[in-house]
Amino acid sequence: MVQINNNTNLNFEQEIERLNGIVNQLLQRVIFLEEENAYFKERAKELEAKLHQNSGNSSKPPSTDFKKKAALPRTKGGKRGGKEGHEGNTLKLVETPDTVIVHSPKHCKNCGEDLAGLSFRLADEKRQVMDIVLQPAQVTEHRYSVVSCSCGYVNCGSFPKNVTQPSQYGPNIKALWSILSNECKLPYEKISQLSSDLFGINATAATILSVQEQCYQALEKVTAFIKEAVCSEQIVHFDETGARAEGKNAWVHVASSNRYTYFFAHEKRGKKAINSEESILPNFRGRAIHDCWAPYFKFDCNHGLCAAHLLRELTALIEEKSHWASNMHKLLMDAYHTSEKGTKVVAAFAKLQKEYFEICEQADKEEPPIKHKGQAGKPKRSKGRNLMERLIKHKDAVLAFAKYEEVPFTNNLAERDIRNVKTKIKIATSFRAFKGLKIYARTQGFISTLKKQRHNIFSNLKAIFEGNFSLATLKLG
Image (cartoon, rainbow, N blue to C red):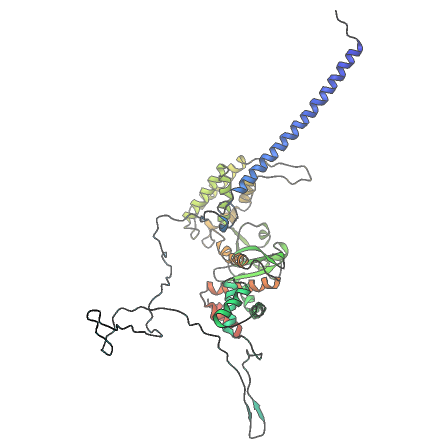
């Protein structure tokens, strides 16, 4: 029989204790690796989702898509060309052309006889060419006369009120520069080159900027009127976009209605900007249509959410095999068609609302629960749960388009207006000074308002520089 002494027992106990320590270390290592693996799986999932983002499932602009696709599905099978109600502008023959050139044959094509001097008649067929006349800029000199009265008093004439300098540019070229800078988005250097090529006007970029500053000052009262008019509208679309000025980030905010467009530039995007004197939101009491940006809900007005934004988020979840997102996407699209693209009320609104809540309950079951990180950390939610909570919290704003005839389905009105800023940035890169961004915002708001009311942009900008623009022009629009 083998005898084991006490020393041997002690060695076994030490070995067991050592092995238990190793096991505990390995267990802790396994737990750490499992957590790390879960983190990297989640991170890989997020990166894959970003890799597949496009304008149809995120807020990325359509210009970044490899293949273009409309945000909302279009009806297939329709005829091409202008749709019903579209006013065509096909080039037509005019009754009284400025110049008529008669092309007569010189020799007979049969015998070769000279046809000069013979009587002729005009054929019924005629063709017209419409073109512009390019000529150097015309200079008008203003002088005044001095007349002595029989009483001995010397009387002097006076210059027109808008002729203030020994030499200056007229309202036509100033209006053209404003259109080229704002509506056409050209940089000042290119406007300078174009003026030189077409009219022989060698104006520097600094001169053109000075003219834009004149326009900015002259539009002060007009912009105040537009701001007040937008504030009094019942439905107003809101949006904002980033811009670069003085090498820093800046923001352009837009408030847009069917008749008016109000822009303002600000150094900030959030609270300071939308609560500033330039913003209309503090005094607005109508219905704000927007993309569910949280600061908008802090104002005392009704709300309507852009369904196109929601559809893109739902599409992203559908691509991750989300069933509730697919059901919600179908529900909103069915309501879109039932409401005739957001222009009519959905008759079965109660049924729509009931199905809406049922899908939200389905989402609550499908989405992973909230992960709490203790008292200090912010609870982590999945993108699907975040969207679900927004859909529940702002249910009235989401379904407003189906309940009220005047509420649109999307925020496209503001997005179309704000797109002008992005186009300007892409062409001109940035603004050297923040004031330049403010000048652009104010002038573009005026031009956009003119376009919505179908007024002539050039003639009204000319009136601004001449100092005789009437606010009644916009009131009657």
